[in-house]
Length: 228
Image (cartoon, rainbow, N blue to C red; front, side):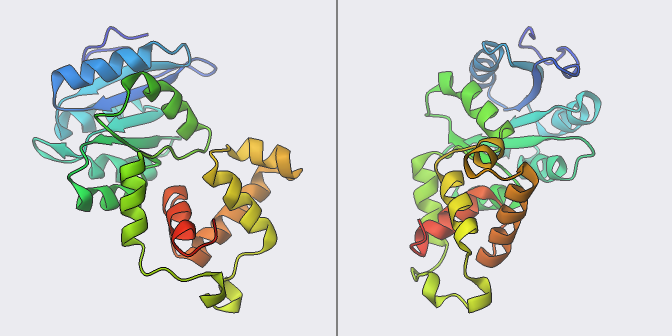
């Protein structure tokens, strides 16, 4: 586990705890999240960046398994790190920690590839569990952000309004329902007696039909049109 400062240990070794990079310009807030992350034996903080430039340096040198990032940074937007993580050569997921007021950036972050979205006012002792949930395939979301996504996903309609070729199959609907309930891909595979790869195919097909790019958007869109 790290000491909580900027010069922390390298990313986790194979079989060890998942390395987490924290990108947050407020020292007190960053320290709170670092302590919460390091409290889990399955996670370790590999770096804390106070601005985007430092975040880039740590991202490239530490190759974190996970990035917990604010969006409003002194020298840019955390969305840039989210985009980089989505294209990284190694497995790297992102989750946003921010304030509720920045709704435009919230949608940008989700579309860039953020797998979860928390508010700084949320209980900090839940953050380790939520990071592990994302790594396992889940998409934790603050209810206020979820409601905002529902509001911006477009006018309510239903599955019958979708073209025939875009309607979800029974299996796709089953998988999406389990995703919405927070089940991980492995758990969905076990419950439905199918492979993890097949679960991924159903999820990708659902993305295409609903015209979304993430679990969060899929659940929000499906809820909006009455599929969930």
